[in-house]
Each structure stands twice: as structure tokens, then as C-alpha cells.
Image (tube, rainbow, N blue to C red; front, side, top):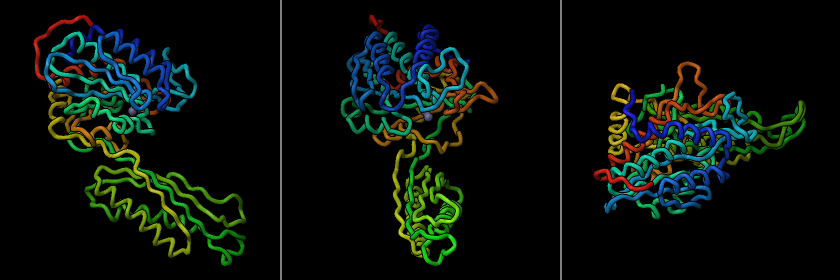
Length: 397
Ligand SMILES: [Zn+2]
Ligand SMILES: [Zn+2]
């Protein structure tokens, strides 16, 4: 059983109510106005200094205690997804077509709970920053916050992140130094030939065989160019071309995604896609363009901060419940942009209810409330251990 902090245990019912409120009122990327206002109000009521407006709907709560200039950041995400909720829970989405299917309602709630408990306990000397970022899904709100000066305005030695993980049983925490989540890139290949009558292919330049060869050749990058013990994914996810039976189209468009953990492999895959497209375009007498865009970098935990996160996780749930060597995920996470600027560690918090637990982004998913007190206790344990100790001085909160 986890060693929950008493201040957090006392908040459990409140946290569940906050989580259900946020879940029922999901807002998507950069549109999290009501959620952001809810967070800011709560932080103010706990006695924190509140900064709004970073990346639009972002919120930073500042909790200072004592005279130390030491500071750490804890980060949660505010946004929901464009998914029609199919769960039957009483707090199901009231906003049709939008849903907290990634558990950011739980993340926001746990960080609020931690802010409340730390403001009550005052067991530290320094500053804790509570970072609530918008638009984690697709739109890179974390990148925007960093670009708009998050770490200049709120200087901190390290930043920590957490995501609920339904594949991991509730009560467990998983983490590792190095990459935990993949980099997310996209590509688009537009092939232009010369359309015409399908019965007279020799009079045109058909982009279809070119597209077929490109799809096949792209699959050789991971299989033939990457070290067998390294990893990468190249997935073609869209093929667009042609409208009818007897016409060779002028153009075919291919789109897809690349996932990697190592920047050198990311560079290699991007280079090889370019070489394959150029080489096959020449072979098939096509005009082909490639757009390659790096969306999210890999989420890479630094060694020392991973040790701090491990110590906090072990103190909370016990060594038997901490997985220190989880298989990294090729999913991606825009907390990666914060880790490019500051040392830190991102962990997975168990949320599984056993076999059949709906996974993230599933329309039946619902954040596991049993994880709220564990996640909030982890935040407080970690932040207090990262800041110089101070005897508890209770202040009005
Ligand atoms: Zn998600
Ligand atoms: Zn998420």
C-alpha cells in the first residue's frame, strides 16, 4: 500500500470532485479557457501567486517558502481530445465530440492537489512552480510555453512530468533514464506525373507504380539501414490518388509518420526518405516533392533527475512497485520540449484496473480515481526532496 501523505488523503474526495468536473467539461488545444480559469481560481484559493496567459491558456502557480533561491517545476496538461465519449460514467463529457480520453483531467487534478498540500505543509525552502500547459495533444502547447519564456520568467533547476498509464496497474510507477517516449515526425510526398487514358499508359507518366515502389522502399529503412538493436518506425498512413476506373491520375499523395528515440536515427530516416523519393522519382520520371516536419522530439529523462524521481516513487509505493526498466513507448509527448531546456524526468503512473482497461485515447477510457492520491503524493514527495528542507511552518492557505 502506498505511503500517501495525510494532507493528500484528506483531499482525496475533493480531488475526485475536481477531476469529475474537469472531465465533464473537456476543452481542446488552446481552447482550455474554463479549465484554465478553474485551475487559476483553485491555486489562488490555496494562497499561490498565479500567472496566466503563457501560451494563451497556460497557468503557472508559484509557491514560495523561506529564503532559498532553489526552485523546481512540476508540469501537468489541461487539454482534451476530439473524441465522442462512450463511457457510461456520471461525469461523462457534456461537450459532444470532446473528451478527456488521455487523462489530462487527472493530471491537472493531481497537480492542484499537490499545490494545496505543499501550501499547507510548507516543508521546503525555495520555490515550487506548478505548470499547467495547454494543447499537449498535437499542437505543442509545451513548446509554445517554452518559447514564450517559461524558464526565463520562472527559473528552475529541473522540471518533472507525469502521465497516467493504463497498461500499468494502479499503485505502480514506471520510469527510466534516457528516452521514454518517441519523437514524432510527419512526412508528405507529392508525386506528379502525367495523367491520361488508362488503356494507353505509354502516353503518360503514371504516378501509381512510383507510389507503390516508394511505399515498399520506405519499409527498407528500418529493416536495412538502422542498427538491428536500435529502433524506429516509418508508417505510411495515407495514400490519395485517382478518381475512377479508366483514368491514370496526374498526382498521388502519400503521407505518414516517423517515430524514433535517438536524434541520429531520426536524421538517418529523414535523409533516407529524401534519397528514396529522389532516386525513385528519377527512375520513374516523376516530379516528386517531400515535406518532412519534426513535430515533437523524443522525451529523454536525465540521469540525476531520474534518480530523484526514483527515490520519490520508491518512498511512496515501495521498490517492488517501481518498474525501473519499462519498454519505452513510440507515442510522443510535448513535455519533451521542456526536457530540451531543463534537466528532468517524466514518469508513468499506473492507472490500470486489470485486463481490458481501456487505453489512452479510447472512447471508453476514464482516468482511474484511485491513482489521484498516489500521483499527488508523488509530486509533493518529489518536490519537497528537491528543495532544501525546512521545518514545517504552518501558514494560512
Ligand atoms: Zn494523449
Ligand atoms: Zn496525454
